[in-house]
Image (cartoon, rainbow, N blue to C red; front, side):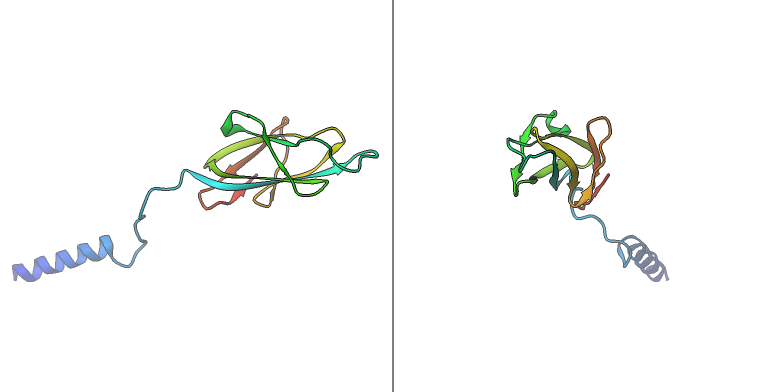
Length: 129
């Protein structure tokens, strides 16, 4: 009888602790994610393109300027592979003749607040403004 009781208790405990519920994590949660920024300029005046360098200044690098890659006369991209998870922000420094049309992070439009573009980076790579 004691054996049957112990078998029942052990079986119930195993089912409750390791059975078909949510699986336990297999490793640590990510501390960073990949974020691609895209700046689209609106050309002002008679400017045909945004001559000069466009910079993104990320908060997690102490707002040090990083050159964005020009993909057309009015569009620039920059990929960061290790953006810390959580609340971050970037600043944008565009050359003369470039007006602001949009700045996106992983396709999500960011809004400027006091010359910075705040966002939240999530472990799954998604971004929220």
